[in-house]
Length: 291
Ligand SMILES: [Zn+2]
Image (cartoon, protein in one colour):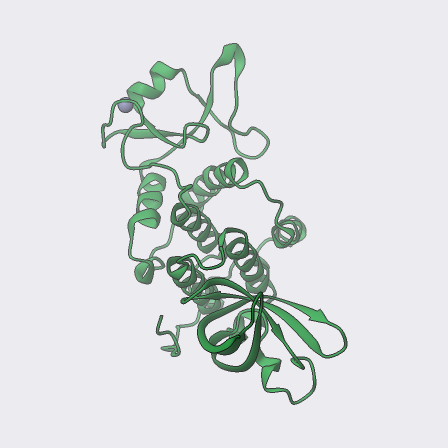
């Protein structure tokens, strides 16, 4: 026999089923990733209508033998402003898709849930460049799931100073001297990914100190305090190239939302999708976050 349970979490995907129903995927504090049926969720006036992507709250569900059925949704935060903002929504959907990719049923996903919540909040606040939020989310999500790079000590000699190269294939950084020994060639952005150069020399990403510090901070800070810094355009660009190569090497999934996001970035006029400081607004003390 099944039983009623209360789950705290966020809707990370919703698919229409039949005429009025919806199948939702929740990232929860208690049970990790949970697929649930929301009967009548698309019927006008249904209390479950609010249970769409980005909504965070408490969900009452009936736990059947092989599936869950949501009976009540008490949504405490919708990320409404995010959903209404084209650029933010693209990034947000990508974060949801990556959370879905990594999360497992009955696994402890509390860190992933916190990261997702904080990252969506950072997007919504418009206080940060979306590209920075994206790289921080990607890097930290990979680390939470055991796939992050070692950026704290040289993979060869163990030194913690003078780290200059990120070698994607090796999963971490090398100091200047060890990088020289390995004959690393600086990987150029865009087309040239990590791989072999001429005469078998490997490409690696040359990291300026500030880009390295940014990676170290993203990987070690308290998730609650993750979003509290900005980077210059050139450092953000360098960080973006390195993280991008890392994601493409270790995540064997083409994210649909990422393809849409990148297509829009490519065609957008400068300034329109790249964050406008003039539109920055303060995050006016949002509530409803109590993971
Ligand atoms: Zn070294």
